[in-house]
Amino acid sequence: MYNGLYNKQMKKLELFGLLFITSIIFTACGDRAHSQALVGSWFWKSSEWRYTFNQDGTGFRGTLDSRTMFHWSNPQAGQLNIRNDDLKIDEQWNYTILGDFLIIECRQTGVEFSYRRKRADEQATESDIRNIPSY
Image (tube, rainbow, N blue to C red; front, side, top):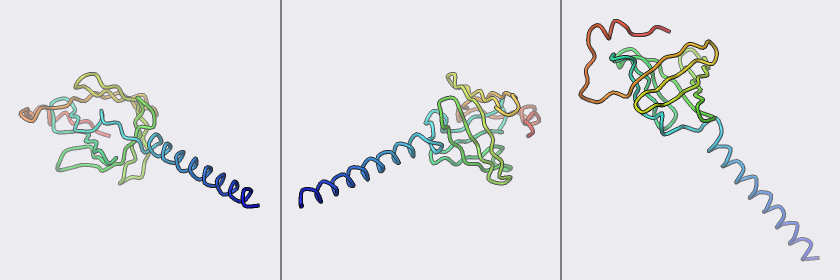
């Protein structure tokens, strides 16, 4: 009698452990995953217009004076999902990183942009600032 009860309790513990481990795997690999390769600021042309991806899945795009906040994740290698916090719009992008260059292509429209990590000592010129992309 005690062996039967003990076996049932052990099976419940094993099932609970399996469910716990599965939930950890889905959390780490699911839609909330954040690629370390994307973390940082990526600048459009030579302007101050940028994408900034933080490690915690938050970020912004625009300039320091005029920016849109978002949440981001990359559920699979080469895919980037952005949730615009202001407009509550979801965007899906494909991305490639080649050295200091980030190339993103919108999966909804096919529009492609390229950005570059910028060294701290580089400055934007007036002509660069006039070429800020519009969304």
